[in-house]
Image (cartoon, rainbow, N blue to C red; front, side):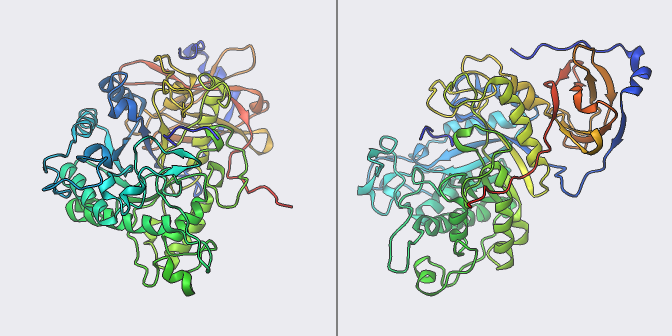
Length: 514
């Protein structure tokens, strides 16, 4: 979703004096819930911003420090194949170039060396996605680069046409050798279900359409994983699979890449041979990576999916069904069934006045999506795509800053998420996270009636990820406004957005086709 895509902090409220604490006990009777079996108690927070954190716009050092202060755990970057290799627009591989040796003359790692070192200085983990476009000399048919999509030449001189899996494995070997011990997690390719990034996608045959992109992705993934496992063995089980976009049949692509048909059954007959699945190997994946954007990176957490094989956030349960089948059939290890949200966000208006959410709704929806992911124990990471908006309004603008640097309300919402949901009997669930907290914390929940003053309700103890969930039971609980407050080590009091009770948040079934 980093491609071109088209088809001031909030004012703090007054804090109640400490002498009101006893009288405030009448506000609510609280029950602090234990961690539920249906909730995730540990989710990594991933941040990605190629323009700022990798390419150096908007003070990358300051941005990395800001990421740490916001409570980010992991920074993600694309290691783009044709960016680091020599003569990437030539159809002839350079003579005497050893693609598996990171020190081979011609390789240029400068932007990634700087990125990895900045992350180290700020005690952030590094997550690298080995990504297209590819050098033309690494294509099986370099004369087809660049190819056409919908009548337009794709992304200038970039190449996505039939990458050679063995050449990719050598590239992965060079990356693993150069950054051994400094990377916490890898994934292979970006959005292989989109023709923008892996082409061709389908080939017609008398037995039906062959998903040649999924077939090729399987080979690319295995070659990349083999190189990483061999040269950085600590990451043997930490190479993610998929990185699929929410649109363009991601479920079909994942199934086919695992040698399963669209119904999750092993390929048979001629299709088994054409899909390269005569003797399918078990892929030792570390988990399945997804980009569960809504259409146009907008909408809400309550939108139902319109198709049966898309992956918007409300339909993330579909990955669990796929992973269970794949593990049962021996295509992946059971440890590989976890889901990683590795790229995600919502557009705001401004800057996108056509598609974006207004700033207040943008902040609320960002929190609601995180509450949805937190309910799922198989979701092991959440992601924020972009720290800053892009200068070009026609690309995804889901940052926490406007392009000029001014904070969006979403900045505060991301730092301390807060969601209040209606519960049975007039009660409310208050869910939140103190993202910057270094372990367990005791934030303060405050609440007010319209026109009143905020008063303390409870000081819950978070888990080690800074997450808590409590139930507030009292007459009128659903009409109160809530805020979360926490004082960091410097003594600064951090405040969440103000939240009102809304609908319970859960995955949504697909729309009826009747």
